[in-house]
Length: 215
Length: 215
DNA sequence: AAATACCGACCGACTGGTCAGTATTATAAG
DNA sequence: CTTATAATACTGACCAGTCGGTCGGTATTT
Image (cartoon, rainbow over all chains, first blue to last red):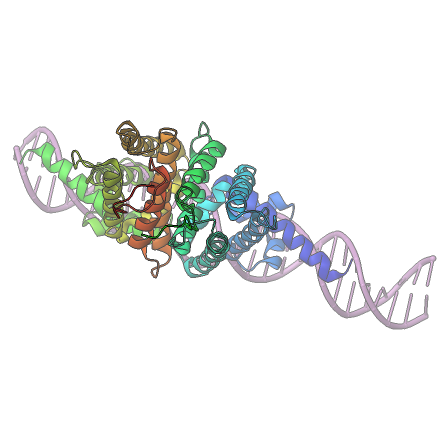
């Protein structure tokens, strides 16, 4: 393997080791020495691959954001399905994904916290905003699709629904993380049903009245 | 004033000073010396009133939790109003409250983060769970009320709706915190409308059709 | 004059980052 | 293939600085 490739790989090893340690201890309680040990390298070596502890933390953030983001899109591609089905699939896939990320969830807290103070704020905030915004974009796109198809009411506000829905998923996952007795799947599913019910075009009155009479 | 009372008052002064400093700097970057200075006392004196930095942090947490909790209940007391109206009022009051708490919002991050690592985890987690659970209780109570009145569909799941709704409010407030261009009021209002629409007993959207005819 | 409240210099523990020196690998020459 | 040499990778003892918490002594109240 090329020298470049090896360097990259070792850097990645360090990042993943750091992710584990940061998840266990939090940013401030994690010492660089411990991270180096976890990665199986000397402290000095670690500093050959990252510029500082903060940089390392940000690299971990980017890595997690990247992987979780690519995974998050699963399920939206069921072509031709009704928008409501796509939204359901999306919810399921999100919930499923995060349920398997227990180990790293503490990191997310740490990221949020970092994005609200410290010198890293701006960098974190930017990535966060970007991520959420793309995510909202997908969801609002689905809502619009449903509206265009006549599946959803025409007077819905796609942006508002998307923002809220994304937020709800987030919050419910968070809640499940806090309270292991919380039934994430069921709650997500049922609430989404209510929302979809609220979004549905009126099922009762025929969309094309044409019963021969006029008001 | 009694010696007891004065002690209590000075402790409170220290707690509030700590809240400011923690909000500015975060738990780890805030030094006890700075907090003492902000409170206008010597470091040694501070330690007459709190046992440790961690203790102080937890005291701040309890204080914020207490005050924000008491404020959060505003608006639910509009007796006799339809459940949907009460829910709307609740949403408004929450949004309004947190919009005014900008200064302390960073603290919330810090609390979440603390509740996911460090020795303080269990204490924080407990209070958080308690708070959310009571809050969900109020909301699910409102939903049940609406169901009993025949205002909401009979097959709704009050727990699920409550959990999700509380989560949504949280998440939207968070979003507004991250993105100052975000229109919190409108989004909250519109999404709640969708949800209420989905909860409504009759899936008959127009509130005042009243063209004189019946389907 | 006793008791209480207050103070900040000081201590030990710890940490991020550095660097002089060692080990390993790549390259060149014989 | 072997040896010599340059280059790269690696290491952990060490440094400078910070911080939570203590304590002996001073000011204030009772």
